[in-house]
Image (tube, rainbow over all chains, first blue to last red; front, side, top):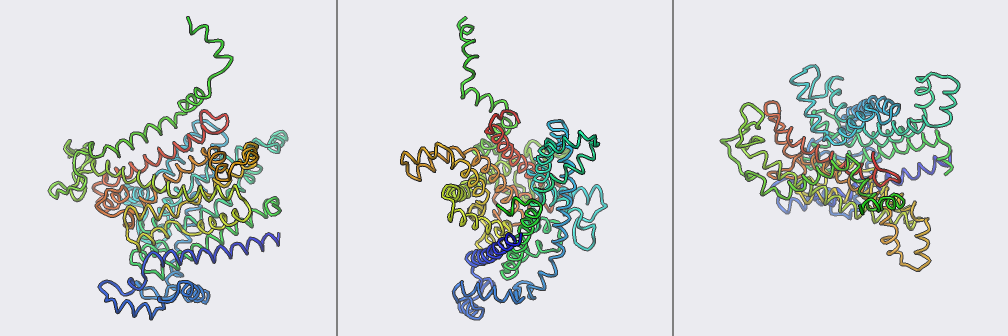
Length: 305
Length: 300
């Protein structure tokens, strides 16, 4: 297990370095920072001055090393639009987005696992088909459109939940539903397929032969084994939810990292954009590493292979 | 009477592969519905200039926010009403189909070419090529797709082709992963070994022997990616950092209608429904092809 852990850790570090470099190059290559810094109507001389002062005239590799070196020491630079320290800005908004992603994941799991189990217990029945229809619809409905419909329903017809802002816990309900519904279908398909496979296995037949009740078999014996692949998917989806928060946070004016990303991208605030993209990449690498290790711990075949 | 004498023979031989394929295709309800829907949408996109009653860009500020036919104040003059600039909504929705289909098809083509090449190479050659491709794919997956796409489109400047290029260059990961796995399965089979023994070139083996046999997987991934590209473009345009006005992108139309949605719900409901129907049809097509291509697969 130690050897496997070290190998995976090394790979994760390599991926993290590569992804930070790729994101850096991609964002630098697509636009000129000096022009953005100088603002509109700047003269060519001013832009050249800015280029020299900020060290933008150096080779990209040097700039990248400089940037990553400073970041390692906690210096993320200054925001061009908010005129404050990037690290403080990001640290301020991260908890909101982390909560949103977590609530969305919990909501997705809370609807997909029971539905997946019910569908697996009655394959090809009308319940199974209804669950499938719900999943297919979830994947087809644009999540920002679904979010707007939620706003309409809860602002006009059922004014019990706030539809904008981020002051109270209630502010998280609608964004979590809108974001979570979109990632629920893959979980449901996985839970259904896993349950069908496990229910057909020998040890479930043994459990039935021993005279255990249906509920006990499903919940105690089958579900635990069907859950293993869901752990890995949950890690990947959590990373996706963090990135996807940009759309939902903007719709609900939820003041988190996604909304900050939207604001800084629209104002070409490169230091903030760069910091958020890199941070989310690192979180994703960390999550997949964690899922890999949990899976290897659950299933010894993985760490040998 | 000739039919009668032919019957027993037919039953012995069984239906021809072609007849079997037809039976499978037509027997799958979801597949038939999705093909019909998609054909309809493609026809709408192609015939938009003929079908649209008005110029989708023509503004008429005297005829702003007219509701669609099924509202009390609706008229036959503007069947789906007008938007906040008095543009005919039916015409805009019809032209919008062109943008979504164009995005879906072009992004799928670009990312499919990149991802399939990488996946085939990784699966066929293995070893270092495989390691390199898998590493690159992992790095790509670690980047938050929508944020990177938004940032690049924002700095380069939003336009239809920038969106197509950015999404096409970013979204190849699923193609690479699935094509690699499928190629690895086929790679060890006898007909590949046979082609190698005969002395066929590597390129010929990959394109002539392997690619046709992993094609069903490729088509299924292509449908998933086309649908996802359409939704992503809609999201980018909705945030104002994708396709730019006055183009009638469905995502952009939802963004423009957002301010008026409390009193003019149709402004977001119509393009939203159009997007959902198109994506639903593409997803159903992919599910159907997967069912039909599976061994012994017929119905769902």
